[in-house]
Length: 506
Image 1 (cartoon, rainbow, N blue to C red):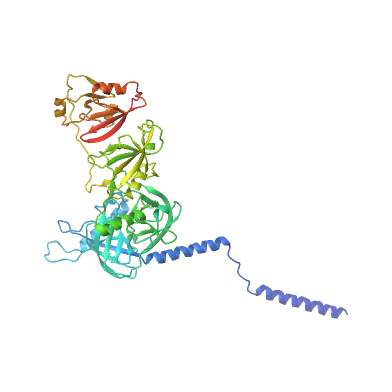
Image 2: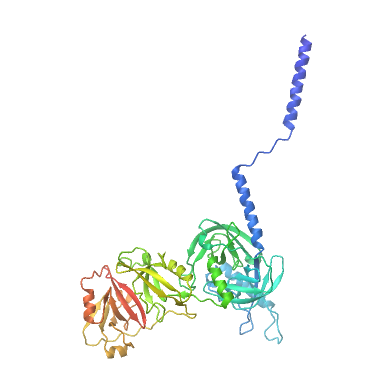
């Protein structure tokens, strides 16, 4: 009985061991990936799909520059508004390209035609399926020959249809049809924090893809106003020399900007022209070969940033201050006045100078716009007809005339500024013609008036809201005013109307 029982137990143990071994050595089902991992894998696939889709519409733009007077080919980026903004490392890259291309060029003394040297390089995208390519103006500006190269290696000769330096946009035409045009997005709907994907050919590394985010919108990059249109999208997607003209796209593969500029080495700060602006400019270049912009002909500041005037503005906290009229500009003879604070354009609220400019970009030359504004604490609406922005516009400047000993006439002073009645002698001396007001005849050094750039020969036409046509009215306008708070002085300077705020500092 014992042997039988022991045999049964042994068999049972052996069977259990064998089964356990079989179970232990059998393949197990892989664990299901977590929802987070699945999401990351889907995002990974999305980036791959976007890169493959967009690359079909991205091109390499190769440029041969026009020879200079000495027969050499210049740096294709030297005359662009961006070259001096580039970090030293990038400038050296372009200069090295130039040197290498010049070494390959035949000496200018060799009397025979030489092949074009393609020493410039950038990126672009297919704007229309009938052969219209969109790129940066600084890529093709001053180009003698342009070649457009597609991902498969196919090359086309390109014809530059137009360039617009103010927005840094250009269009090139190639003899091709049935191309895959890039899908255009809406940069107005682009939000800070969205994914941003740049595609281009940095450092001759064709069709490189970098991924980041939209870091900011509405950026102004140049403080000297070298460009008319400054409304850049900022991104941390890596943009390098050669990316210029290529697309910045969102996660849906839609173009939201045209890559244009970098700021610093490895800073993660790049800039792109918003696609809405790029499309508007491109369409005008295609149709007319040039861009005509609407403008009002005024110099403006943002009220909140105008330290002199913001405390004097009544009944308004946000808006755009009309600081100066450009002589001959559309607004000079309109109902708009100096020191008006513009608060809306055709019912659309504007809080800054940049917002006002964006509203005007949407207008055509000759459009009548309704400006909502505050004047002396009273809300008003006026209509102003836009004009065409001059192609060769330069700010009005006037040489300061040397101070002369004032005539022995009745005069008045205000914070370092001496004014007198306009007499024929003074009018002749300071070359004024028929202006109404009082004339500035002397400015004290290091005074408030000198600090604001007021000069002998300027005409004072108003103090705050009070018209000035004599020394008496000038003095009357100052009665009871708190000079520590400041007064608004309206001036006519060589035909240009502007205002300054003069304050008495302790």
